[in-house]
Length: 389
Ligand code: LRH
Ligand code: MN
Ligand code: MN
Image 1 (tube, protein in one colour):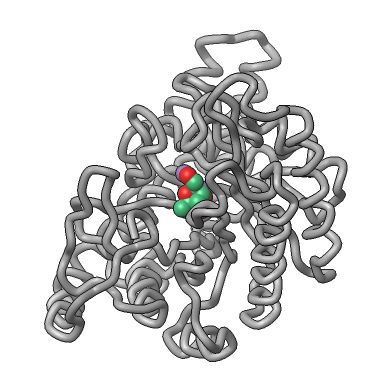
Image 2 (cartoon, rainbow, N blue to C red):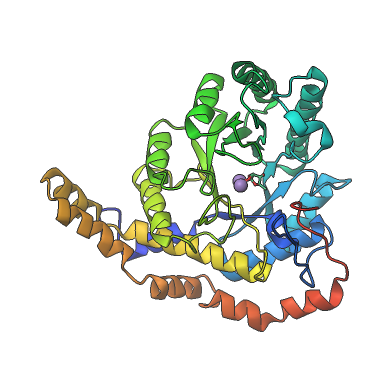
């Protein structure tokens, strides 16, 4: 029992959790050195959605799938949304892509040439059209824009161009739509990225208003960055829009969330719970690539890792923690947090799944389902994920 609730309440919160999987996780991906093709991968966005539906079928908490445009370009987005509904999932965030066109070598919305900026903004506006057609309420903006060499372009002018582009996209959003601005310290730009950190993203979003929020991709920071601090701060300001979850050892590795550092994931989820972010307003999205492991099980494992970290965060005895904190009991307070982290929540989650009429072991149940063999037999010539395409 904790101040935040009984086991029953914790289960209710976990049952309502919503973790979004990315369409690009289901396609072949790799590093810049090699893409290892797997058999049975989706050949089009319809099949990516079918695979995402499997993740939801076995976990019960992954009811939406994010799209990436143009990787998921189709003729009829309403039809794609209908297909998703029939498969048992919905369309989540629309991810824009202004980083894979030759025109964007020197930037997209911050490019020195107005013609290129216009083209990039045109794409962002098209993404809002796709939101209208699919019923998606979230646009995710990540810009690879930046410079490689000191003096290459005017850092401040690039901020002005970025602000102009964001103004135009913001003005196009409907009443129940929002955009999430994603920051990333480096890569592909190596000297100065135009949205390198949460502070830059926050300042732009603050100026724009409530429909602009920051998204925290857990792989986008300098090593050692205290991400949970950023989470606590943004939540306090009402500017945390969501997460792109993944794990990293070195840079933007895009490994399975919770694999590299489950303790960090717990600390992040604790700040989400503590800050009231465990609500529909903070999107828990995965942004990962499965380069050497099978993709659907990789997503199932990732969803389960987020669930486990969330369960532990919900288990923190907040009354005991507050008492220890106000008494200045350093070791006592730390022990309260560690007690929750060290709890084995797998039995609780297995029980919850049974109550949700799911198999208690999603990985085993998926493996036994035969879906993996079925798609290998049916799908010949699967497509790459966007990366390396
Ligand atoms: C950039 C990023 C961004 C892209 C995704 C594929 O590194 O995290 O979210 O859209 O990767
Ligand atoms: Mn991301
Ligand atoms: Mn990334």
